Amino acid sequence: MTVSAHPATLGLPGTDALRARASTALRHCGAAGLDAYPEQDPGTGATVAARTPLTGAVLAHLPATTPEQAEAALADAHRTFLAWRTVPAPVRGALVKRLGELLTAHQEDLADLVTLEAGKIRSEALGEVREMIDICDFAVGLSRQLYGRTIAGERPGHRLSESWHPLGVAGVISAFNFPVAVWSWNAAIALVCGDPVVWKPSELAPLTALACTALLARAAADTGAPPGVHHLLLGGPEHGELLADDPRVALVSATGSVRMGRQVAPRVAARFGRCLLELGGNNAAVVTPSADLDLTVRGVVFAAAGTAGQRCTTLRRLIVHEDLADRLVERIAHAYAQLPIGDPYHPDTLVGPLIGTAAHTAMTEALTEARRAGGTVLVGGDRHFADEAPDAAYVRPALVRMPAQTGIVATETFAPILYVLTYRTLDEAIALQNGVPQGLSSSIFTRDQREAERFLAADGSDCGIANVNIGTSGAEIGGAFGGEKETGGGRESGSDAWRAYMRRATNTVNYSADLPLAQGVNFL
Ligand code: NAD
Image 1: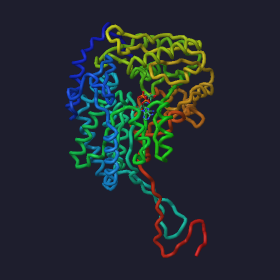
Image 2 (image 1 turned 60 degrees about the vertical axis):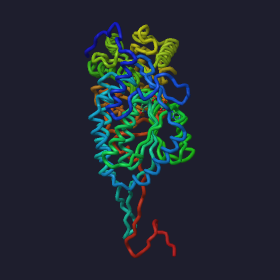
Image 3 (image 1 turned 90 degrees about the horizontal axis):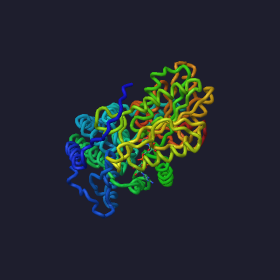
Image 4 (image 1 turned 120 degrees about the vertical axis):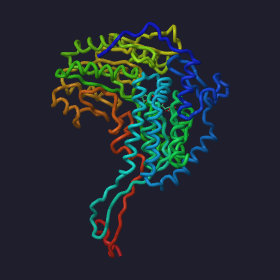
């Protein structure tokens, strides 16, 4: 692993330069630059502050979507649905194909905005944009493969089959940490499935949402698709609640914390709407005595410290066989101590800022709680550049040895903390891995095929994602993404996740002159 000490100073440009950078990227994407919005809070209370975690500065105050605008957007999305559902799916695919082309042309601009808003280092920001392009490719192919089944029926002269139809308006609520990828997983698939999208992005990431919305509007104009296939609601939780409560929104796809899911799911259920939940994780890796330690160290450090620990799939628990725990922990601690922390635009930086100072407070509290429970913080948790950027939170990822899986270990703290636990038998390791309320991602590092298969078996990991010899994060778009238990049970992105965006109709066609009833029932 290539590691080097982080620089002595952040050396970030001032707020004006950051505003200019955002404006350039926005304009390239066809959205208004930040000079269209007030820099100072107009005091109306109806704004979304575009803030950068790089310095904590507010770059602009954007007008939040008003209730009247939201109502108009929902009405238009529903009206558009009634027409869009009759457009052949491959023609709908042409819109997504064009979107993919525009995303490709603007990947640098979008990555700039992702770094500015979410604090991701350059390669991860570009990776997130790549994910958008990949899902567009996938969705375009899918637009010719929305297959139903022909089913063997029991009656002569009858044909039994199922067909898939557009579902309705898809409401997308997204989190700050994947400000654009999660939207694209939903939007690309929903659009080919015939569902217009109403997007409520994180209030912490409005600029990337404006850029993506402008690019999609252009794709619609270029391909003759109705502009109503996509609407944006800028605002906070109350804007998400509009989607949760509105019966015109057939599917609410909500990504965020378990807390948010607990609020959204019952509201959607109360009106019998469909919910797709992608909630918090508390992901673990098991390391067995046969593991390739070089590969394990690299896999663990990327999964735990990458994205400054702010992925839903971030590795938060390391479950190591007791015979190798000391050796492995020493190597990880060494790598952690040298991780370059700082300006995420700098090519050498591996750890950018947390989303805000509140995240550092949560991290500090979790570390205090871990110590109280008998844990030892081996490295990390310390804040850097606090004098230079008092409103930002640059922290060294923390590595903590824990005597047991206590309450704080079973909790998702959205910050880079890796708890190390030890085990003696694989059964014990799997019980620890499964012994938390969340069920998103998991992995095992081993060269023993029996151990690997046991981990993947029905009585192995209980997560939606179970990997062997790679970390818990960094999924490809081709697979279905999501998790069990408090993670919410949703699946999106690849495989057959598209089915959540469509309704299934079972069709029985009688082409005979008789009317035999199912199950041999006689009547008339
Ligand atoms: P958050 O729950 O604070 O906010 C997520 C979104 O939900 C935001 O757009 C927010 O405005 C909205 N929201 C909040 N309360 C709402 C309510 N009552 N009704 C409707 N909408 C509401 O999450 P965050 O801090 O932005 O993101 C971090 C969390 O998201 C972590 O828990 C992380 O694990 C999770 N996450 C999960 C996945 C996944 O795919 N499983 C992906 C990314 C992030």
